[in-house]
Length: 258
Image 1 (cartoon, helix red, strand yellow):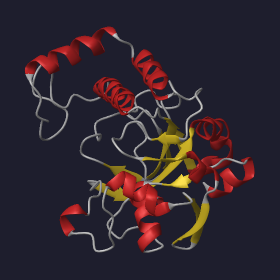
Image 2 (cartoon, helix red, strand yellow; image 1 turned 180 degrees about the vertical axis):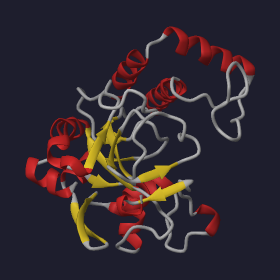
Image 3 (cartoon, one colour; image 1 turned 135 degrees about the vertical axis):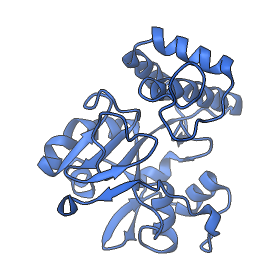
Image 4 (cartoon, helix red, strand yellow; image 1 turned 90 degrees about the vertical axis):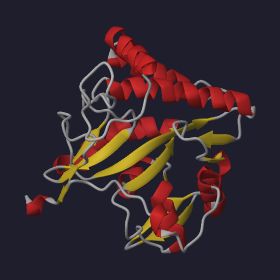
């Protein structure tokens, strides 16, 4: 990742649990099982253009363009020959190797009600995007996960009707339009729109710092604590056990183990 981004002048920064690990421990969290990366939209699209050729045969760039059945609107770099099987997605016919998540960050308006509107619109269409591949409720379809998620029959009916008439590609295009609707404006903050609060000043991305992550040096927002506070509200090193969340894969194997 870092090699490709450096070679092509692509800005990136660690996010989520990876950023927490870099800030407090200078390594990946002991209970974490993936790596989270963020990129501003132009860098995100540039990475999508060059990554597969640079990654070679060892990795696969999973996107809605390269993997028709992916339930994820964002990119993942998957390790070929490995296995990372999560119960929610195990029945989907797609590459299910160990991965790095890459999230697009887009500009957000200063008005809170517009931010909330953008967030809720994206959540709605993301739910439809996922439902095209996996049904997670007990009404109006066979539930594909061990424990159905709670949802009323009317909402399930609406989702079923919408995914019946809307092609998956159209849903993805609408999601893209929602995420990028303010990118042409002169605004100071960017956000991973699918989340409620993962935002930071754009200048903190431009002036990224190098931080230690295990044996590596990687990019992080200039004010990493500000990013973490915005995203999580309260950040601390002594995280309670009930907050140590991972994906808990049913099967985890590297190539040499298969």
